[in-house]
Length: 290
Image (cartoon, rainbow, N blue to C red; front, side, top):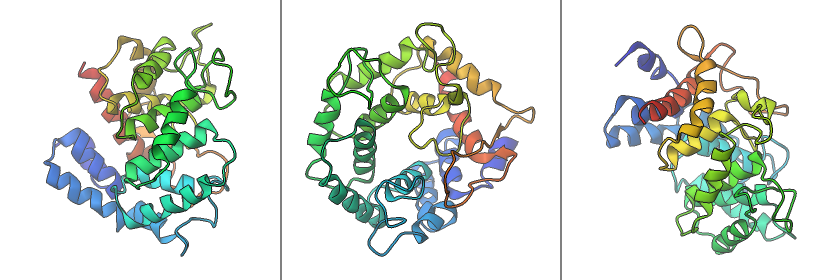
């Protein structure tokens, strides 16, 4: 075990289980034991302690950002709260009660709900129908965009597309070629670049807050590709270089300011970030292993 891995393993359980899985080659049983600690120690336990008696957070389904039920569940997903955790299942039940009141689904929010439901393995009767809606919303360029429901020629949104791809990756059923087409949308843009100019399409996408919320960024995009079982494509080389250039002189990655809005608590103080370092090392190991 090298010094960086030892430093990472001194962090929160949400970091430790990922380091054991992605970097040290630990046995699956050891990874599982560490992941289970997310519910009882550190950041995950702190978020669970904030849950309301009715199973929601902040007494709200989607807003306020970033302390509502939707976004707190996303945090717990990113931290690694195991599927089937009772608190997550109750929260998913509350979100599906909210879903019943939707007039028309919004693609971004529908994608988040499908991802949360599938990841935590909540048995939602309407899950297949919501996935069918997402598949129907795919645009001609392979992406998705919350701003359209009928114009298939509209350009895909990086923000919407990454959320739908993450949802389809979590969903256990058959989604046809939708994910492949969605990945090709990003690959044609070299993940983060304008197809017209080759410049960074979204300026903020080259910074990596601990929780990306509904935003696309380069590290989030590479994490998707690394986890989706797709081999490294050479068109992702520029994106991998963006992550590498963000590395500090000490070999670690920094913390970034969170998106504006109330947070439950800061994940890490300014300086070297164990959380982002573990994330970045994972995707670079995947990339360099090509």
